[in-house]
Length: 240
Ligand code: ADP
Ligand code: MG
Image (cartoon, rainbow, N blue to C red):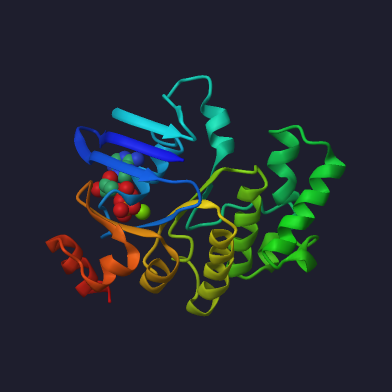
């Protein structure tokens, strides 16, 4: 579903991604872990072409994508992204937030978009919040709306960049539960997270990024029980 080969990206001459190779099969969940500044967000942003790669191959669903190519908007529909900060439209209701892209980007008839948005709100447990504005929701609820909004594009792949890092601790669980549910339903996901228990329990594979390279990639239980590379050991000993 996702194939990345020899991906390079630098900012102002400073290399940030230094030859990333990554494959994610359909229905797999991959967690990316690593220290701040190691390139995790840049990798996700390159996958969604929010950043333009310097070189390398990016394939989604067997299709190869290049910046400036006419299929980039199509790619963005196929790859949903959820950020640390939810970026909901403050002046739109919860339902309107979820309907926005289907109606305005995909030209889905409004009636159909309402029905789909209601179903997505039910999926994330917020059907009773459809008519309120984001400001009246908790951070965890806002993030679940952001997930529903990303799902409204019917993506084949979901990317999450530290989706629970901005939340109060008591709100983290409800967002992780929503993601766990998506994983169970077979969604292909790449998740940048510092929630190590979630990575161990939910992710098929966990990968450690260190200084712009994936230095270790293994089935999650194996990686946490028996890290092999020095940067992985150092990172886990700091965070666990
Ligand atoms: P992580 O998400 O792992 O914390 P990032 O991918 O955000 O790391 O950043 C990796 C490195 O790239 C950092 O040194 C960061 O300062 C730099 N960087 C990220 N985005 C930009 C940008 N738009 N311009 C310049 N430098 C950037
Ligand atoms: Mg980041």
